[in-house]
Amino acid sequence: MPYQIWHGKPGSYKYLRVWGSPAYVKRLVGDKLDSRNAVFLERGFPTDTRRDELLLEESSEAPQSNAGTSSALDVSTDNVPILCRSARVPQPPERYGFLGVTGQLDNDPKTYGEAMSDIDSGKWLEAMKSKMDSMISNQVWTLVDRPKGVTPVGCKWVYKRKTGADGEVTTFKARLVAKGYTQRPGVDFEETFSLVAMAKSIRIMLAIAAWYDYEIWQMNVKTVFLNRFVEEKIYMDQPEGFTVVAKEQKVCHLKRSIYGLKQASQSWNIHFDEVIRGYDFVKNDFDLCVYKKVSGSSVLFLVLYVHDILLIGNDIKMLGDTKAWL
Image 1 (cartoon, one colour):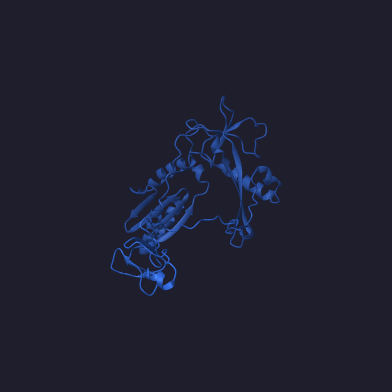
Image 2 (tube, rainbow, N blue to C red):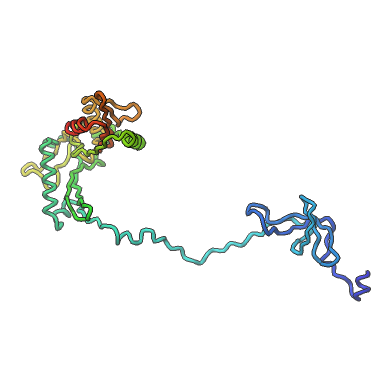
């Protein structure tokens, strides 16, 4: 060969490629979803370099590259990096790290015993007596002998300190609630579903009030569940701390609903609907907790959400009369 005669040694064949064989060149730019390699066809070598002269299959472009690999049997494969597990130990984020510093601890009593041993035991006792007076005045129950085979529903006291804007305690509240989880379906209650106003209905009513410059009054019904008589025969244990002397074995025959009963919310909703429609309010067809009353040029809307009420209207006198009636 001329190369061997001129240089005195045989030439190297390792750089030779089969003419027309596919060559694969790594793409330096492009979308991350594109193939990592471009396919070219081998065209030989230029006279002044060892780099391959390649022809792109999709066009007549003929670049020179020393990064290409060529073989008639080569198959294009992307370089897949070897994944290794990080040695860093993951730590939970400090998202709520200072919640205990900025928040207020819940020191309210959980039981009657804790309330009586609390530093504010006198305040709690006064709150419980006030609640019992309300129960007695509303004739919520009567004491009777426990019927044979009847397991009375339990009850408990729930305590809460109410604070003002400055964080100081303003009110001590005590509420007697029934242990509804001890009620038996089909015996102590039937239906429990209760209607409330839809969120979009409340937004629409507020938008109407803003557009027409209507008055908006908000009300909250106290001792809301005591306003409805209980249809089922429900017997409850006497409240802890207020057991009647010489009548410890008797139980409370509930006449009205109290907090905690499964059917309490539904009973209140049925009672409110009956009463408010008797005051010339008309129920909305699309939201059964939205009512409307029209008298001449005066219009009044009422929105009910459990025991929270929105009064929206254009007549102050009608608003005041309705509030006083409720």
